[in-house]
Length: 460
Ligand code: F0G
Image (tube, rainbow, N blue to C red; front, top):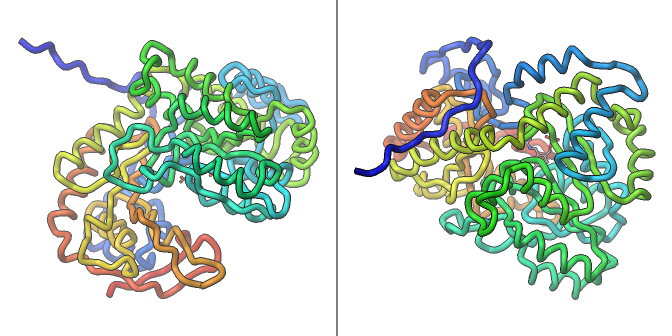
């Protein structure tokens, strides 16, 4: 007899619920048409299951809400700052903390204090806001992720890894002085939430040390990355998520953090650094953009909730259930033979729109059309991550044609149930069964910056 299968389940129970509006197909057809077939332009009240993002959409715990009541709203030296500093130091181990209103606030500070005009900033695939801040500071982003990351069907378990040969080639070409730091995202959002291995981080530390180059983390989903290391990297199966998270940080010099993901808060972020001089520069600059260095654009209560969220985020049972839910949905969709990015990453399922809708050309915006269709089918809101998100080449004015043309089904933490996952999988299946009827789109309004947020479309 085979042993009984033991399932994961959430290590919490539900104390309060938020009621949702149920809509009819006719209402959804109208809503998505009025939104110019852009899911960013839908009203949230017209959405049933919101998979637009996992950013700021998590459910806080009763402990976090209790922490909100302990907000010390002093302009300077709030108690909550010191609580956050202590939690950061305990779980991430960096010397210095500068709070910011969210991740991109920290990206702005880091870019401004470290990047000079003409610098090259290598990273494991771009992220929209990260790259923009690097460019605004005068730097040029260089993608040094391994080639496997660009192939949606490659099953390598650490597709977020850095290709050290690509980094060596950059150092050879430009010289180490032109490279202020390597930016390492854990996990890699645009590749499908793919993790970086510890072995890769160690090797990167060794190489960069030889050349005097710093390593800065994008720590946004670090606990999720740690889970993949624990599950798939040799030597880590008996280590706790907390220990793995701390080890990741130990191979770096600092990082930026969006508390809106791992740390289970609706707003907040920070910059962390080990170097005293850099810290002094950043704490001087933060007062210009965010607020005093002991609140950085956050209320005291937000810092308290984030400190508690950090502690909750590195609990093994929490992360097992969080990623367990993502994998559950991924398995269901994959078993139905629907093309998705493999292996399934930490924060969502990414549908491969090129293979889902092979009858559409990339200039007919297949991922955009698919996201609109999913909403019309079931009220599930997803996000395009393809040609619309990639934007245009500033010099030629032509579209970038990214290899990955994806629809992201991002799972908020502690918000939806397994039954919701079933409803989502059924909707994807239904749309897939009727995929041949799906028409492409024409862009009728195109904003100049980050066009995916506000572009409008018409059905062809
Ligand atoms: N880095 C990564 C990898 C991110 O995914 C995000 C945000 C940021 C930095 C910026 O942080 O939003 O707090 O300013 N990602 C969100 C998303 C917006 O939907 O993937 P932020």
